[in-house]
Amino acid sequence: MKFLIVDDHSLLRDGLAALLRQFGADTEVISASDGASAIEIVTRHGELDAVILDLAMPDMDGAAVLEAFASKRPDLPVIVLSASEKASDVRRVMALGALGYIPKSASHHTLLAAIEMVLAGEIYVPPLMLSDAQVGASGPAAHKLTPRQLDVLACICRGLSNKAIANDLSMSEKTVKAHVTGILRTLGATNRVQAIAIARDSALIA
Image (cartoon, rainbow, N blue to C red):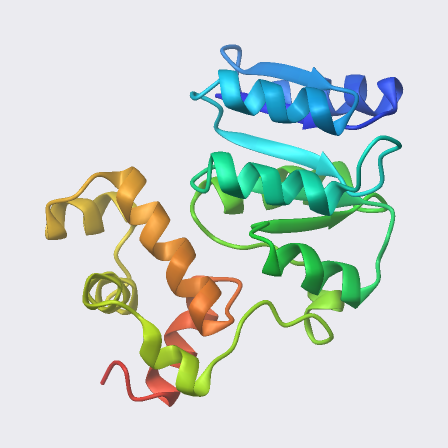
């Protein structure tokens, strides 16, 4: 597992790095103190598994860094870690492609759980912020799923894991994760249970 932490505070970077190493002895953590360095690292390190990005940095806004990441590595999961708990900030970064939003007031347990969700292809927004910060749209948008996404959604509704879906549809687990993320974003869901409910309400799945 390889992570990039982007934050201008060295103490926070060090603390996060120690926390992330709980994922296993083989976990590697790279740090960047500014947006420009982070963009350079993402360009050079194609094997990164996820980025944890501060929203407020001195050299460039975290949203601008997020846009650069989306341009260079649209497949790279980015989790925003911010002091802000404004729903408008959550909506803004999720619209730019972030897959998670974690307030800095969150516990270590919440942070690790959120990262695990994002690595599994899901989306994380704190429950208390969710009602004011919908990350997608159901209804007509639900019918914008591709045929392959509908196949994956049908498997999700059957309760299959990513590995089982990969075997069932003859694709890699990485591709399944990408499809699951796309499905959740299109449906405006943050997890599989919500996706199943929306799919049934929209008559996408019987």
